[in-house]
Every structure is written in structure tokens, then in C-alpha cells.
Length: 251
Image (cartoon, rainbow, N blue to C red; front, side):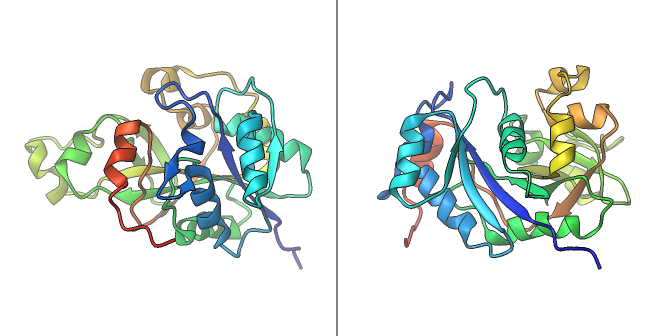
């Protein structure tokens, strides 16, 4: 009988964001961004552990202050994946690491559960979420990465342009003829695979699209996808924050 997987949720957080410095500590109706993300993720009882991974003492002190777990990591990391890899190396008892974006204060426990379910088979090494695109504006938006999948629910390619191309149809008709999917930026990785992909050099496709996950596909790693119908709201800029401050927040 296989032993149950030990699963750790990791929320990478850095202070020095180019578009929104100090973003993890920004106030959202009385609670910081990072606290809201942490409390949302903690609702998922399938996780065996949860922590914030940061290189900043201000974020670390704040997380400790609201009762969260935190691990200080290197300031040299270029991505959340790299930060998660350091955590996995320091905490080898965990089999799977779930990388949760620190700028989605309304993340749903169902989304995390969908990622975890992908690891019910030993074939899954990396997993992520996708959601069906419903509007032409979203289809055209280069800030919304699109993904094409195969019949095994594995990602074939990610792109900032609408894919697949619908020959002979105007773009405002594309959604009527085939489903299009956008990428939701939450990842799961088996810990040993996380160590491998953290050693990969930036790839040609990744540089072209500015999408890290293409590095893995270009190097032959399969990325399992699960479909969610829950909408994610990421806060990348101060303008994004202004848009959600009028949202009804009960806690």
C-alpha cells in the first residue's frame, strides 16, 4: 500500500515588485494581501503544511504577527518556482509542493484541491489549472496566457496570443466553434521534479512569450492540467487593487 503523499502549500512573497512595491503588505479592508491569501489557503484541509516563503524581514515579521508560518529564503531567486525549490530542499519530508500566488486574496480552496487531485496518479510530475475563456476581450488580452491541451489533459503550449487559430472565422466567432482556455497561475510539483526544473536555463520559447512554464515543456516535462470554473482575481498593480476594494469582503 502506497503511503499518503505529504503536501506542502507555499506562498512565495517578495517586497520588491517592479509594478507594485510592497504588494504583500498592502491593506485590503483591514487585512494585508498576504494574510488574506494565507487564510484562504488554510481552508484547504488537504494540505499537510502551509508557509510563506520570502526574502524580506518585513514580510516575515508580519506573517509571524498574524500567526502564520514563514521561511526566509534567498534574495537571488528569479521566480516563485525557484523560491519553492529552496523550500522543498530545506523540508524534504514533503512529497508535493503547491505553489500559490501571493497576489490572489480570493483564491478558493476548491482550486487548491483540484491541483492536489492531479497527484492521485504517479504519472503526474507537474500540474496547473486552466479555465475556459468566455469573452473575446479575454481571448485577445496578452496579459491572459492561453493554453492548448491534448487528450490526456496535458499542456501542449502556452501563449499570450489566442491559440488555436480558427481559420476562416472572424475572431469574434472563435469562442462559438471551439473551447479556449486561459492559464490560472497555481502550480503543483513533485519535490524531486521541482529540484530538476529549478536547474533549467531559460529557454527560447520562454524568452519569446515571457512564460516560465514553457521552459519545462521545451525540456520535455509534461504539465498536467485540471479545469476550474472558479474565477481568479490577481492584483498585479495598484490599479487592480482599486478595482477590488469595493468588492464585498466579509472577513
